[in-house]
Length: 322
Image (tube, rainbow, N blue to C red):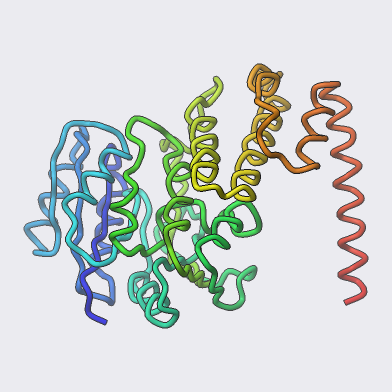
């Protein structure tokens, strides 16, 4: 394959990490790239760094705009992209030299619309790029199966928009929600739903740098309205498409998030839990969890502790017999 791949990088206040990120993209073994750097009104030297790389490499395209947030910057980059495929990289992260080639190979091999690699959290400037032991072989899923896995054992792999290669028409169909955090949670399920085939590879080729200054490492001390909005937005999307099972899984995810948050933060989400429309489709376990929590958070925690203990015991016995 020699199709053009657009790499979209939103840039804002990441001066210490930006050069590392850009060099990892320029150094890809697959060279037919359009590298789109969107300077989202960064007040530091990020804009100048982007411009310098544009002078060094003709594949680098730089756009300077007023600050609008990560979603707005990504939308801007997608709008100005020309590739058959699009991948997203955050400017404080970096990727392995074979990242693009690997994802393209997966797409071609399985005739898929989306390919995914695994991530590895790091605080280092270099990585060994190991295999994810939980995914010893490549997984081929339908779009709906990917949506189901988004609420299960592949959540960490599937939930982000980075670490993926998408057919551009899928990305352009669903813009990111401007002005919202947790935009990946709100949007990525739509991408999978629009795909016929999704392939997941076990190689960890995306370095998720643990930047202590990033939003994800500086969570607000108040209720995260954006998280609640994103989880509800995802559930409503599946409802609108008459996907009852997927909607149920999405509403379950939201309710369990609210309960965990309230348990950890002195009941700050109790009003959301109490006002939740019980007409929504929920599975039996979540309905029981909500009822127990409403009776007493203490009783809920004790029952959860017993449940987890029994689950671990049964799982250990099963593994012992294998």
